[in-house]
Each structure stands twice: as structure tokens, then as C-alpha cells.
Length: 637
Image (tube, rainbow, N blue to C red):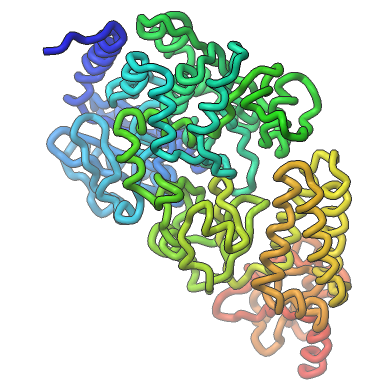
């Protein structure tokens, strides 16, 4: 039998201690509460306290553990209960009443309350998995596998699940071998650009300068995106291990996690992970008994979206204005403090330990030849089951939305999917069978981006949506480039005029010209991609632009200046005052005949009266163009 190396022996000792510490947990009921940011917002902390109180009242010896995001945000708060002799069961939308029922019926009287369970889970040890969950047929969880099922603030959970095994293996390899394996896997950066990580690492490793840095870009600022935050809150050690491996491969002795300050829980859990890793000899000097020294620290970003761009990020870390710079030199040559620097995204680093453990060929067996592996998405917007998902590259948008996300709620019709963040593109139903990968999406006019996906339905105005995303990028522009600073401002002014019914058909050609100029003249990708929502909506939803301009009408009934609210007298009930009470500006009043009407001069188009009108009446009607109001009022006199 071959002798273990010093690093391997040290690692095995750490893992055995972790397993011994956790072993007693298998003999008692365990309760996992998802307390990532989404879970907390839904009431997870209250559920946690309710479980603790009820267990105490009933005298039940059970362990309540806080875990991260399980991905099923639509069902938060989530709780998983594993009791010896029963399958692990996941319960969704848990409240105080259900907590009492589960403790009394399940933990005391052995009735699992299957009628409230979302799914039974596999549990070979104390850690369950979502393998049997219905949408698991379409998902392939690689970097999200342990999210929601290990305690992110207890390193022993990660160690017991084979955590840091890849690092132990790497420390017995030559640095070029590590880079060779990452290159062979064709791991493309998941921050949006899709640049091969191994090529970037090789460039840094080949520099004559010996001081080198490794930085994780966790400055996730896209509206509707929460992938990086969820991973850092749920399994921070996976990212930390990937960064240490990268540092060994390129010869770096120090690194940073650049996390936006709006992610306080992610920062706290990462800080805890770093401290625990140092205590176990996984960070700092002589890692796992080797001669390799490396340490990490957190840099909290101030929230500027443009600082997600590499050179702007570096400038902000150096105390300068977060402005992009011309390239070359590239960061691999002159990055932080002028030294060679590897800058990769959270998800990119998270794949690295898995590639080292399972091999490049294993990684390439998932996904497409040009984009191997998986894609992690934050499903948001008009989708039945929003949340965090991981699917193989090559999965179609239709499968992502309808099979994983379970389609559009409320029997509404799908209109578009905005993919790639605020600089992504809005793709119509005809594009739903496009495979998700870097190249296919780019060809369709969108981008992979960091993984934000916003679903839009028939009630969404595509002109207004384009304006919303352009307004975001225009406000987040650093102002360094004239094309980006002024071009996006002019585009925003034109879109605003169109949504008010003040546009001209000639404006559409002006929009296209401005968009092309902004793309060509901007220094960084914020400016180069900012026009994407405008260009794709012009391409795929031209008729909506034309309706706003020629007919002064918003087909989706969304633009406030192009709609009016009307109460149909023949449907209105004199006994009902729902609309009156719902109006924040007292625009709804009672006529002399007892029926309700709307003072159009006061109406702020808030939609409250429409939502408040009882289903049996449906008396409130939304009209576009507003000129239809005069016709309606004449017909009732």
C-alpha cells in the first residue's frame, strides 16, 4: 500500500476529526432551516425560533441547524427534517402553526405529515440531497450540490463532505499540472465574458514578476441576480478552496474576495470561513504541512456596478476612482498594485475543486463542446417557481422556464426573457429553443452574463422594460467615456418620450444609430453592452414601439401616460366601496346616483382600484390610449 504524503495525511486527520464530531448527529432528529438572505426575508429566523421553542416545550432532543439557499425561493421558508427511521422530508412555506404540527405529529408521534411535505430526500448520511425533487430531472447540481444542506459556518460540515480534498491533492502536484487540468476542462469564466480560466492562469504563472494576486469578483450588481450571493452564503469554503488552488497554480501568496457591501451576510459567512480555514491550517503559512503559504482577506466594495469590470475593480481596491482603464496591459500582466493578477468570478472558482477531484473529462461530459459544464441562474420575474437553478449548458430557454421554473403564473402568456443582466438582451417566444451557452446567446443578441434571468409576460411593456434596464446602466455609467455618458442619456430621453406618447418614427432609427455608436465608442463592457435591451426589443418587438408612436397606445397597458382607468357603471355595485378605500389620492369618488367614478385629474395610475375591485364585479377597466375614455363616457350618458 502506498504511503500517504504529508499533506494527504494532514488532510485525512482533519477529515476524520470532522466526521467524528458529526457522527453523533445521525442518532437524533435533525432540522435544517434555510437562512440565506431569501429565507430570512420570508421569515426563516422566526421559523428557527419557533422550532427551538416547540422542541423545548415538547422535550424533544433534536438539532436545529441553519443552512444556506436550497434554491427553491418560491417555497421559503424551507425546513428539512430528518428523523432516524424515516426519509428526510422537505417542507415549504413553513410558519409557526406548521412548526407546532411537525414537532408534535412527526417528532413526538411519528406521523411525518406527508400532506405538507414537498418531497422526500435522499440521505445516505446526515446530509440530504434534492436528488428526487421533480425539477431535479432537468437540473444537474455541481457547484450548488451542497448549498442548503451543510452549515456554512461550520467547516467540519464541508470537510466531512470531502471538502479540501482537491487542495490536498493539488499540493502534491506540480503547479503546471494544475493549470493543465483546468485548461483541459475548458472552464470558461462564469462572470459573463466566458474567457478560459486556464489560459488566464497560465498567463499569470508565466510572468517574471514573482508577486502575484488572486481576486474573486463577487461584485454582483445585476437587477434580479443573486447567484454569487447565494453560493457565498451557502458554501463559502468551496470558493475559498478554489482560490487556494488557483493561488498554488499561479504562485500567489495573497488574495482577496471583492464582495459588495450590500451583501452583509455573505461577508460575515465568508469571514467566518476564512478564520476557520486558518485555524485548521488550510490558510496561512505551511498549508496542510506543505511549504505553500497563502492567505485571503475580504475587500468590501462600495456598490458601484461598474466596479464589476476588472480594471475598475482594481482601481477601487487601490483607493482610486472605480473607473475602467484601457487594455493592454491586461490584469494578468499588471493588475493589483501593478502585479500579475488572476481575477475570476465566484462560480468559476467554485468549479475548480470539483474539476481537480473528478477530472477534466468528467467536467466536459456535461454541457456543450464549446461551453462545457453547467450554468447557474437566478430565475426571477413572471415565473411560477423563481429561485436558484443549475442546469447543463445547452439546456434551452424553454426548458429552463417551463420545466425548471414551471412556466408563467396566472395563465398569462409568455412575452420575453431578459437574460444576461441589465446589459443582456430581451428574447421573444421564437427564441425559446435556443440552447443556453456563451456563443448561441450572443448570436441571438443576448449574453450569458453572470446568470440573471428575468421572465416577462403579456402585461409587460417592452419599450418600458428597455427603458428600465437602460436607466440602470445609464445611472451606473462612470462617465469616463463620452459615448457611454452622453449616448445612453440621449437614448434614455428618447425612450422616455416614446413611453409618454411623444415619440416620432424617426426616433427609432436614431436609437439604432446611438446604440451602435455607444457600443463602438465605449471603453468597457458596461457601455458596449448597455444598448442590448434596446436593440433586441427594437428587433423583436418593433410593433410595440410603433404602437406607442403612431397610436399613442401601450399594448401592454403599462405606461402611465398612455393609459386611463374607468369604472363601468353597468358593472359597479353601489354597495361596494373597495376602490374608494384603495385610492391613495382620493381620485375615486361616489357619484350622486351612488355609483363610483374616477377624477382623471387626480388619478396617479397606481392600479390599486383595479386590484381592489371584487372579482364578481370587474368594474374597473384599464384603457389605452386614454382617448378611449371619452368614448366610454359618451356611451354611458
